Image (cartoon, rainbow, N blue to C red):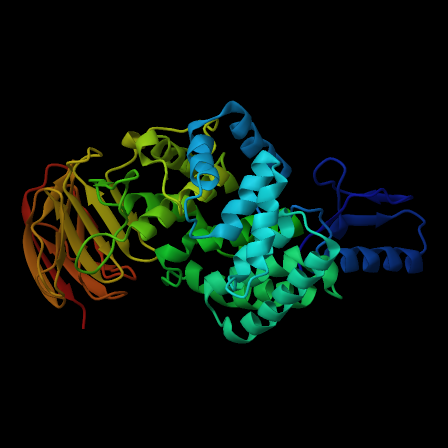
Length: 476
């Protein structure tokens, strides 16, 4: 079990060595007359306290979902200041624009404005037969005012949906997030304050399964589910004081940067606003809903851990007003999460090459300008973006080497063996066999070996000023 500490004073027990001030290392006790039986009882009690599992029962006050006290003050202050995000949101809602997520939009508008009529509209929508989105139903229940009869009716509806979702959710992240939000919103109606639903989600589905696969480098959360992931992170931490990131620290350390660099350099100009377009593998125009949810995820990332170093660049990425979400779908997310008072760093200071060895993804660009040439290798796909167009290369195709400063990114001609001329200190060779040892032979140097990552990328570090032939061969 390892070392643990007791923070309360214990009479007549003197430690031979102390830990941090106010704490005592239990492994270093020196008895000074304390009866052994009492000593054993005290130690057993300490072990019991230390070994207690997380608390999965919800006792927090409403609003419990997403709108912490600080965030609620922020959105209300934005309304008072008549910020451009509030003006856009207000124009859509009060102007009668059809809202794709009416429960979410009307309930948020009520919380920001205090106008009870919008609470009534959100509740009326939630009680209709057409309203079946469990996530929105939970938000309405948690955020809105309603009569006792309405609360009972909506609560019963959510419980029925929750039971149905329990049987069908499986491993889908969006469905599990909706179940968690519903259980937390309804905790006071549930006999165990939500524990029977929340404990399996956290301990089994997340910690024992999904988080382990994420930490091993598996791509099990597609980009369009990243926002749902952060709604889950926020809600669990706000109500249970559990940081789900602790089960996959390596994944979450790299996620903000990985997410940012996997956008094409040139933005897409739509009628409502400009969008940064995340990577996609299909023909045709980009899906703007995916682009909207990608930005919403970024806003929620910054809100979750605003002081992390990697988050500072992400905030700088978000601060340009031309990318503000102005559509009926995106505006509520922009208004809920954006924090214009949060400082950020210019993403132009970020490295031009990003390699995630855990999942094998690599992204490189010639500059951070919007006319840059960009190459991306992700989930077995190799793409080149140049002159405003994206090209997905077929499996086995060879991309022209791209030089980024003192680094070259290139694809292998063959998975078994390939040769090329090296004239850079750092070389990323893409498209080799994943998790495989390769013999590396460089002119006038000794033969070495190295292993590719989970995506089949081999990273070569060569002497400064080198100009030599390199041969790679898969080891038998």
